[in-house]
Structures are given as C-alpha cells and as structure tokens.
Length: 107
Image (tube, rainbow, N blue to C red; front, top):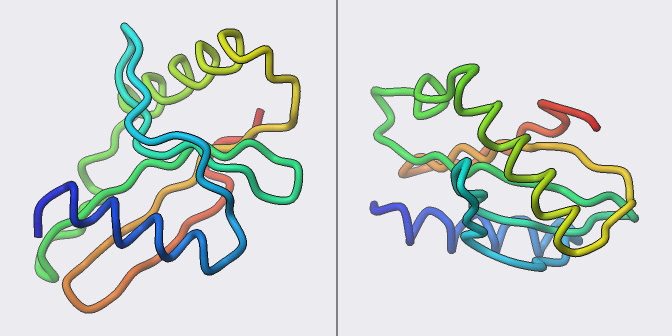
C-alpha cells in the first residue's frame, strides 16, 4: 500500500471515531503534517505511517521527525490564529490492521 492509500484509510478511521478532518498534507519549511483534525475541541496533528506486517512503520519516527511535526504544528497554529489545545497522534496502518496512538506530544 502506498502513502496516499494509508492516509485515506487513516482519515476514514479517524472520521468514524468522530474526528473532523481540517486539512491534509500541510507543508512548512520544517516538514509536512499528514492530517490536521479537530476532536472534542482539541487540534490534533496526525502522522500516518504504513508498512508491511513484518516491519513496524513507527520505527521510522525518531526525535527529528517529532520535532519537525511540532514545529510544523506551531506554524499551522500561527497561520490560522489557533489557540485551542493541541496534541500529536500517530496512526499505524498495516495490511490487516490500523492503530491510533493518541497524545504522543501534548502542547
């Protein structure tokens, strides 16, 4: 599965959980945020990772990637004038499963 299919699956999954998707593929000079969503008054920045069942896609997320997401989230908030509570979530998409890890970083 490619990254676009994984993002589609993740967005559908999040919508079913009650998340409102505000934007996808938000780009800044620091990097990209796959999904920006709103859930119960909290702005959620979501990193989507996909892979095979033999390799954990979350292993590709290191401290540099988290820093990139946080800096990009701050850019989004400044650009949009957002003052709501924020958090960063990860969604792991594998061929036969999906996992949502909430609150990896809270702002």
